[in-house]
Length: 476
Image (cartoon, rainbow, N blue to C red):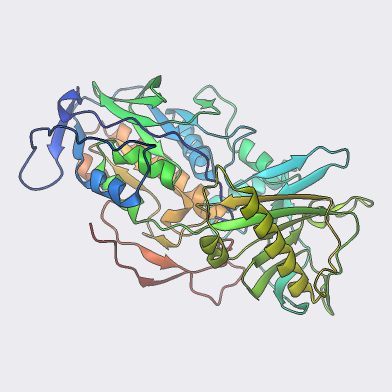
């Protein structure tokens, strides 16, 4: 989704034995039925580490939780993740009269990848440091966008964007598809996605670390602290946090699909300059406000937040957002919760150097920014997708929503949440009598996603296919 927002997460506790899955029928996920529990192996000394391979192995040794309790008349759904998909899922459930509790790790607000950073240094610095803009190609999402525009929260971005090649060679991208931005950044759009009623509760900041089936309900824990019991659960985030959470959940089918997801890594550099940058002009479209940068490893996108968000205001510093390529992010990936100072300085130096090359400036001639911040989006964008709007396991009363299920855009995230919310509401309305009819997305293979390093923009670049050849799932 244009763009990113993973968050730090806690290490989950060890899985409970199958005999503790009270209130649920536990069926073996592999051939041969349930096996007696083995004595736990000795742990080596030192800090335990998370391994993707070990998590996959644990996931496929899980036993499937099968709820046998009746569907309640007044269910409540836990949604883990308060990004665009989680919020739209909660909104869709509320529209159907189903209660939802949204758990989000955000310290400053909801929105996930719809993130805006404001720096109060006396000069009002504002950066969209994840999603840069969005388009709408589906009528359901267009209806939501129209509501944002009517409320004054969003507007069409008419500034020039295009492709920038080394040496300052800029080519505008003409498009009949409107491009939209938040009037004061992306985050207020996320806040506006939740209706004002008592059917939705938001809990933040909260790092859910464990799911546990108990007496026909899902119990949630945050570092062993209980966070309530729920009739169904929705995973509305991805990356290592979701992998850890699912690896001991008793939901092997959801775990398998989440494990197949591959995510890119991208560095972001926020930089504020006292004077305008020497931006090349297109004869027809003038000075650009955003550009997809070509053939520079440390740079894939650059955008002038000041011109984009405050086009009529003068005497403001220029606040720019720069993103690296996914290949650069992969080569320079470090633990994003604790970025070494040396790595941060190297990335800043490389990206500022890439800006000079892109703009055709001599080495060292770029003006020194008075404010900089680097950030690694370690689980930035999906690289493959099953091409389904949502995933739902009716036996375990659990589902997944997110942009990665159909692509990598804000539109994809919102539509996925809507789809899962309606699907779960339909399941509850059925009384759970025919659960097999509500299984969706549990066995679909994943295909490679095509698009820009900062995501897909439906309608902006229609000549490029968005999903290409199938990709084989990893062997287990």
